[in-house]
Length: 394
Ligand SMILES: N[C@@H](CCC[C@H](N)C(=O)O)C(=O)O
Image 1 (cartoon, rainbow, N blue to C red):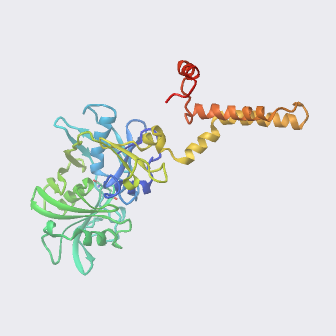
Image 2 (cartoon, helix red, strand yellow):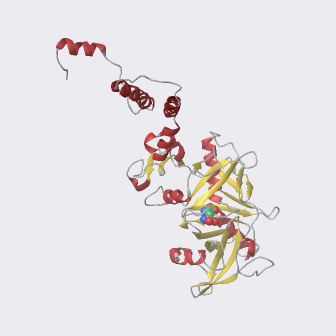
Image 3 (cartoon, rainbow, N blue to C red):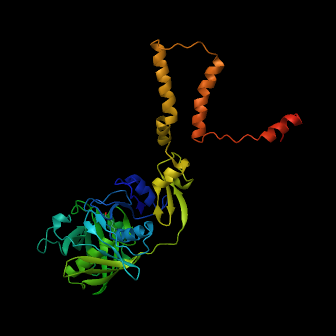
């Protein structure tokens, strides 16, 4: 989660997001979510980058991210679990709620079922929806139902060969990318492989677009319940087990919205400084990739702003050029040079020592004011001792 409340421009680039998410050289994450200023008044805007740096095209959505989002704001604003912050996403306005039992419930809105809107090129099988359609993947025929929860999902409960899936047995890293990049999904797709444990209990594994196999996917769990209902496999309210825990999903008949409820646990505050290539707080090139990780909050810009070692070189140079310390003497020199060249003023030759002194003083003032040079207060007693003792002290 990135505290991006003071700007509508993400403070982490897609490339940096991919580095942050790297599980070996970064913090390790499925994606980066930005808490940004609201677009239409109250609340906040959510944007996200997947762990490969891709940004889900608008409308975009991240269900688990929405739950983390509300907990993060709660902590940033010190609301102590009392808020229901409004959240603008590409999908529209979302109001996650922290409930009395600490669980966060998110109204994920209406599922989109029309093929072209998802988008999928698979032909509709029921009205405009793609339900239990056949999808050829590497010589196998899978039965898939396509749902968008603001992002595309392809849900499968099995193939012609494996009518009932045992999701633990799946070679997800092999099969997942084949679905993600399948020509039937022009915007790629998230894919959920589902095992029906009962009519109110489902178990899924997910291959996420731009992130691969992840431990949970909120929008995926919602899509799974919608697909299970459409295929007549489950009730509208289900527990969905994902590798990272369980989510309660309800697709309500009255408003056609999907609601997702689950805990968001915040790990105990831990402070670590994680930097590119894992060596020091600042990478060799300085600047761009210093990330401070504190209690699951990343304050990249604060880190760069507050830690002089983390400031990019270009910023130092720019600040030096723009610094009044330099601009004022330069302007004075320019004025004097102009006046001299036009004969408005004349100066008598001065000693070279004086020129050196005149040049050194502004430089010294600038160096001291920027903290490059420190002048310790003169200890008169020590100096007197030095001369009275007739020699240097250790
Ligand atoms: N990878 C997804 C976006 C992330 C979804 C998220 N994991 C969730 O919990 O909903 C995409 O590109 O659509």
